[in-house]
Structures are given as C-alpha cells and as structure tokens.
Amino acid sequence: MSAVTSSELLHVPVRHRGWAPIAERAPALAATAWRYLDQIALSLQPTSVVAVDRALRNLSGYLADAGVENFAAVERTHIEGFKSWLSACGTDRGRAPARNTIRQRLGMVRSFFDRIIEWDWPDAPVRTPMFAIDVPVADDPLPRFLDDARAARLLAAAANAAPLERIVVELLARTGMRAGELCDLEADAVTSMGGAWWLRIPLGKLRNDRYVPLHPALVELLGRWPAGRTHLIECEGRPLDRHRVGRIVKRVARAAGIGHVHPHQLRHTLATQAVNRGMRLEAIAALLGHRSLRMTMTYSRIANRTVADEYAAAQTRVDALYDEGDEPEDLRRMRAEHKRMLGNGWCARPRDTDCSFEAICEDCGYYQTSVEFRPTLEAQRDHAIAHGQTARAELYSKLVDRTEVGTG
Image 1: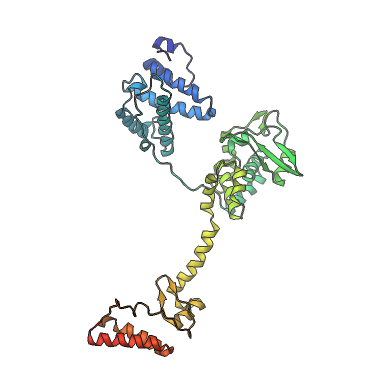
Image 2 (image 1 turned 90 degrees about the vertical axis):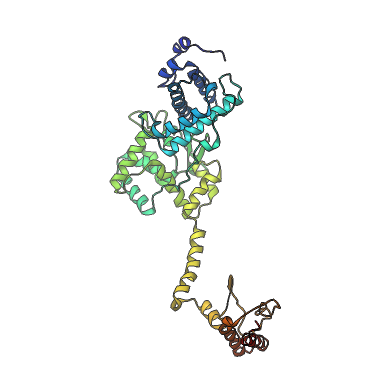
C-alpha cells in the first residue's frame, strides 16, 4: 500500500463515526485501520466489524495523543499505556468500561497486530507488541435464568398483555431464539413439515440457520397475527429492533412483578427447563443453534441431576454420623457386628465368618506396638474371643503380653 498523505486522506469520506479527528492528526494510523476493516468486512458479520472499528478507534486515538504517527512505531510501552487508559476511561463517554468490554477490545487489538504482521503490511511493527497475557481471561458465569415460578408468572402476564407484547414474549420463551433472530424472522418463516409446524430461524450470530418446532400456542398466535411484507413480526409496517424487544420484555416482566428481565434470560430459561426435564444436550444444542456441545454444557452445570441425586444419597449417610438415632439399619448392623471400619469404608464380612486378613498387619514381623495401645489391643482380643475367632484371639493375647513386658 502506498503512503497516504494527510490531504489525500481528508478527502476520503469517513466511513465510521469518530475517525475524522484521528485522520487529521495521524493519517497513516487511520489508513491502516480502514484497510484492515475493509479486509475483515469480507468475512465477519457487520456487527463484528463495528466492534473492531471501535477498538481500533480507541487505540488510534490514544496513539495519536501520544505522538505515534503509524503502527510500525508502536512499542511495548504504548500498549501498556493503552491498557491503563482503556481500563480507566476507554468509552465514548469517558467512563471505565466493563471487564468483558476491556477483554473484547484488547483481544481485537491483539488480533489486529498479529494479522498485519502475518500479512506483511508496510505499516506493521517488526514484532507484535501484544501478547496473550495482555488480554484478561474471560469470565465464565452461569447463565441467568428464571426459575419455574417466575417463568410461569411472566407467561401469565404476557397472556393478558397487548398482542405484540404477548407474541414477542411467547416466541422468546418457547423457542429460545435470540432477540436479534426474532427481529430477522422472514415473512414465510412458519412452515409445515411432517405434519408439524416449524419455525425457520435465519442466519444469525453463528452464521447458521435452523428449524425449531412450534408450540401449539405459538401456532395459534402466529395464525392470528397479520402477515408482514418482509418480516414475520412487524409493527406499523416496520420490523422490530432489539431495543424495542428489550423494552417489551421489561414491560411484561414489570407487570408480572418479577423485576427486570432481559430477553436473553428467556433463552437461558428454556435451556435450563429442558435440561431439568431430561432433554438430551444434543437436542438442546440443535434447538438453540449452538455450534458445539461446549456451549450447551453450560446449562448442565446449572441443573446436573446426577450430582444432585448423588449428593442427596451421600448426605443421608453423612448425617447418620452425626445422629446415631437415625442411623441407617445397614450401618447400625455393621457397627454392632464388627466395631471396625476400614480406611475407606466398612468390612461387610458376616459375623460368623473368620478372615485371615483381618489382623494381617498385627501378624507382620515389622509390626510394633507399645503400652499406650494396650486398651485397644485388649478390646480386639475380647472381640475375637466373643466371636469364637481362636487364632485372632491368640494373636492379640500375645500382643497384650508383649506390652506388659515392654517388648513391643
């Protein structure tokens, strides 16, 4: 790419808001950033390009303020300063951004440097000034979902809401689609296949479309809804946008008395309800449009019935250790018969059956004991005599005698 002068660049229409001051002060930074945005626009979603644009605008503005004229001159100290600036006031309003926003923007900046170096661009630094450690580790929080009671109250409130509010909430709650996917539903999205009704959800965040089964209640609602010209759900001749969908869900949740609810929580709620009721993870992944089961496994962390059942079974036995009055019968019987627990459990040998291994350590030539253990040895001897275990009783009698003469 040939060098671009300041006067030439200023005659190029600014394609993204906020670049004009940077283009005036550091035209080379703007030229390289714009070239990069043009390249990624060929393979990424428009919303992703906008996010990268914002990250590069943040970086370029900081570098221009620091007197850096091009990316080839960026050094490690500039990146360290940019990280501090971004964490303190890296938003358009001069506020500290959220941790996830910082992570995303730093990750985009690192990818930018890695790619222009790999692509051998003239404005690339000799080596990357950013490393993996510069990008904060992503948080992995559990999805926020509505419990069954709150979900029921939300749908009850939707049933009494205006038609648009009801159909929006019902579609989100019963299909698990994203708000953006709902807004992009085409006019012919509802179709009949194999005697059932399906909804075709168009290409979305993960660049894949899918069919999801329609609940009978949704089939009835959509059957009464007037057909749009281009989109399935239109209002006053215009398609919905995500902001309006968010306001609708918030309004219905407020009417239900369950506080603030975000549209994406209804997606999490459906997935959690499905896991709780035994739906296979592969089927849930297909319903939600996940590319891998790793994304769907998040919901199994919320509602792992195996963990819950095994915990309940183990807790019953743990409680028995603290309350002998409620001790299970099998533990009480073993306690009465053997009076002996092994290191990792109980010996289940019947009372009248001898065991040649029961005193295997005490019979070993390396075994040592002393007078402080005499009460235990006497108890073992008496237990063997009471149960008719002659060999074992003889062994413990000898050990008791050894403690008396101090030859343990």
